[in-house]
Length: 145
Length: 132
Image 1 (cartoon, one colour):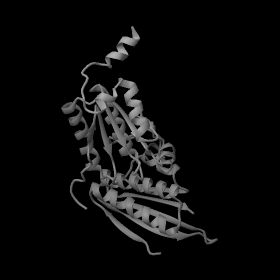
Image 2 (cartoon, chains in turn brown, green):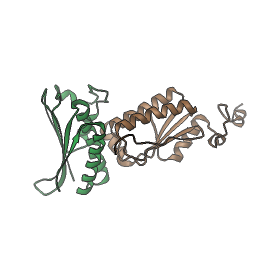
Image 3 (cartoon, chains in turn orange, purple):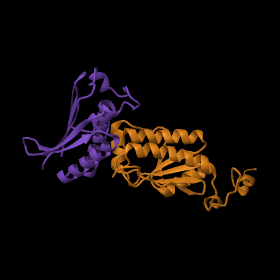
Image 4 (cartoon, helix red, strand yellow):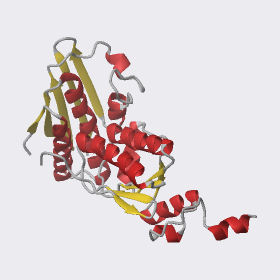
């Protein structure tokens, strides 16, 4: 099992979805971090949703990289949510003394998308790939005034 | 159950070590939460070996106490630079590397027994036990 494991990065609307489905070695984790940032720049996505529901363990290294990704994404004007953390992983993280600084965690992908949507007023149209272009849907802006 | 030894010589071996620990822990009958604790500890301690000593090994030893309670002992040993100040290394937030300083003190909280022996210039051995 040598060489680079490939974690897919999917773009749905203005959100990058990163489903982690294997136990990643350190190289893969670092590589993933770089690829997420590259994709943020390339696509102009505003949110990153990292699904760790299949991850059986988060140690201090992976925890640090998740925090780093969130911090770097924030500088690039994108928000990061980590979804699907298993209870055993959450318990172990707390006992280790890790707090995933700057990372929002939610229970599942649905909640993650909802959170990112509310944060940036990412409209359904944009989710479908029809770029609106503005900061919020026109109707919403009119409602506010 | 037999003990197993895993060489720790590159970053990929860290993942191999934690995978081995998880499957041994499952075979002993540890519940999922303890499998996760043990795999996480193995990951932390194996990384220390690779990062600070470059090479070493992990021994996973299924064991039992005097009353027959099953457990798992993990030994991480290397012939690296050793730890000059163990007390400092065991403090939360202390790190000489790029880490968060959670590795050793955090690992100790995840297990029942934790022992660290180290001699500067000779190497380090960390032994942990978790009982079922």
